[in-house]
Length: 186
Image (cartoon, rainbow, N blue to C red):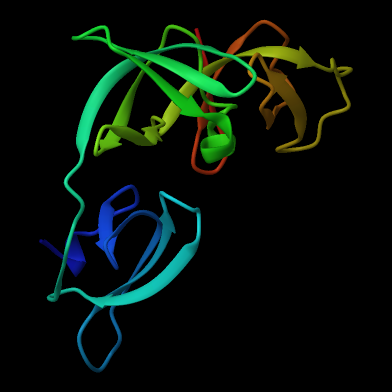
């Protein structure tokens, strides 16, 4: 059991006997009454979305999950392929179940895989990831305005708006929750 106030994005809950993963969580503390969490959950089995309001002091059933650190190997036409760093077990994750994560997966990098009943239900993407700029337009000196940005494309295909001084081949850090440029990495 888990308290409503302890629920975070990525937490796995059991609702109606089915596992759901929390995709959004909003903490609300009204002037009157008790605080609560407004939670948006996605079913792991069929992808349906469920929104629920949970009082912070009430308890809900959490799904018993395992977390394995795995290395991302490659993608084929249907699956992402991972290898467990300790047991060398191979995991296939269907692309259709995690389409939004394709831009953040980099070969030979480690990611935490969440498993429920032996099946991968989530791939945890780090909060900040370093990418190499694959495509970038050049700008002419003097074209700048304070805070001017341009779109670039990373080696994984992610489009990010960056300052004008960023060039092709440079490494940048990106916030994976907002797709915002954080800093240039040397």
